[in-house]
Length: 456
Ligand code: PMP
Image (cartoon, rainbow, N blue to C red):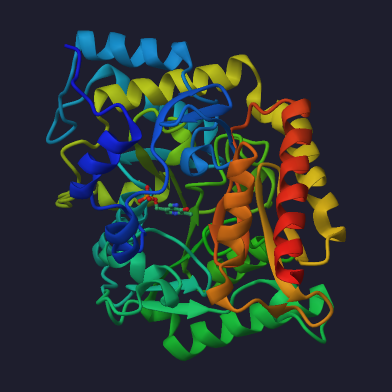
C-alpha cells in the first residue's frame, strides 16, 4: 500500500500541529511550528523537506550506528514480517527471532550476563532493571533493599521511575517517583574538581558515595545505576578508575550495579559493550537500546546476571513484568541483522580508528576562544561553549549559544544537537576520514560565525 503522506514543507508543518514533540518547548512550536522536517536518509546523510542533504552528526538520536538505509537490516525486518508479523513472549510463548537475539546478547555481554528481557525503549530497560532487582531482594527476604543510587547529570529516561533516576533538573515542575532515588555527585572533573588533582577528585567522589551508602544504610539500597559516559547530561567522562572503584564499593555493601549502556554500546565507543572493555568493570545488569537495532526498530534489552535469574526463577516466584512488544519479532530481526552487519564489517574495531580520529578532530577545536572543554570518547562527544575560558564562566542561557552554533552548522550541512551551551555530536559510526574532516571544518566555521556575531 502506498501511503498518502504530506510532501511539501508547508503540508508537513500543517499536519504536524497534531504531533506532540518530545523534550520540546511546546509553546515555541505552537508559535513557529517544527523547525526541520526530515524526509529521507541514506548512509551518513539525512535529507530535509527543502531538499538539503545534511551529515547526520547526531545519528538520529545517538542511535543510527550502522548508518541509514542499510538493505541488510531492511530485508531482515521485511522477511520477518512476511514470516511472523507478531507474537508475544508472554506466558510460555517464544519465537525464533527473540530467542536468537537473546542468545546473541548473552554471548556479547561480559561475564555472567546471560539472561535477557526485552523492552521497547531505554526508559523501559532501566525500569525493568530496577523492578527485577526489587523482586530479587524481595525473594531473598530483604524487601527494604529498594533505594537506587544515581548521579546528578544522569539521564536514564522519562517514564515515572526513569525520570526520578535522571538528574533532578530535568523533572522540575513534574511529579516523579519520590523516596526511591538518591543522587550522588556528578563526576565531572573540569567543572567540579577545582583545587584538586583528578585522583583526588576521584577519591572525593568515592568518599561521597561511601558516606551516602552509610547514611541511607546499605540494607535499604538495591542498586547503583550509571552510564559509563553520561550522555544527555553533557557527555561527562568520569575520572579514570571511577566505575571500577564504584563497582568494588557497591560489591562490598551488596549493592547491585546497573550499567546504562543505552548509548555507549554497539560500537559507539569501539566495543559492543563499554563497561568491561573500556571501563574495566563488571556490572550485574546492562541495559541497552538505540544502537542495538541502530534505530531501525524500537527495541531495548535488560541483560542480567545468572545469579539474579536464579533467584527470580526459584519455585514460587512469578515474573509479573513485561510489555506486549517485549521481543517483537520485527525488532528482534532488526537487532540480529544489525549485529551481523557490525560483526561482518568489524564496525567496533573500525571505530577504534575512525572514532579516535573523530575525537581528535573535535579536540582540535579547543583553541577557539569560546570553546571551554571538548570531551567524550570516539563517536560520543560534547563541546562546552563558555563566555570566559579562564574562569569557565557560562554564557547567559538567553543568548542560546548552543542553538545558534547548531543552526550555523545546519546551514553548512551538518546536524548537531544543542544542549544549553553544550553541542552534542553522536554521529553514525560509518563516517569516512573525509567526512570527519568536513564535520570538523563546519564546526570550526560555525563557532567562528557565532563568535563574530557576539563581537558585533
Ligand atoms: N539511558 C540513556 C543513557 C539515554 O541516553 C536514554 C535516551 N537518550 C535513555 C536511557 C532512555 O531511552 P529512551 O529514550 O529510548 O526511553
